[in-house]
Image (cartoon, rainbow, N blue to C red; front, top):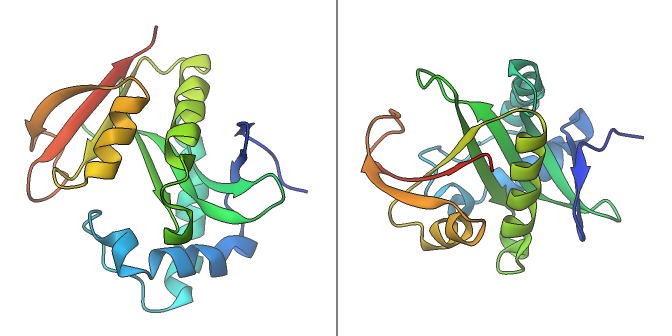
Length: 172
């Protein structure tokens, strides 16, 4: 049985395990999932298997941090969510989410992002930043829906081209 980091009304958030490799590969190998991330879809499941220890290690970067698998309460893998310190940005943590295409449009991203935000606040994180591709309307809406404020376009975070839309929230 895996450890639950937090859960929401419909979702369970837990550390990634090697048993998630096939589901994560199926999600990440979809070019539409990678469309706004700047990442190339993986061509072999071995790439995902190699990423899992790195994802697990995010939890060691501080309280409230992690790169987690998201499942339904009956164990169906639907995506991932993360909170991690931003390199070169003292006191700032990035929040992000990705979902397999069959689960788009169901409100899962907003639900799990709110859960991740609450988890971060309860563990002492003071400022969360979502770095969103400017053309990714759905992720921009999620950031706004969870109460983040649009701070403008910026290349400050070295998130690639074009400059990212920065949304932020501070611990209440």
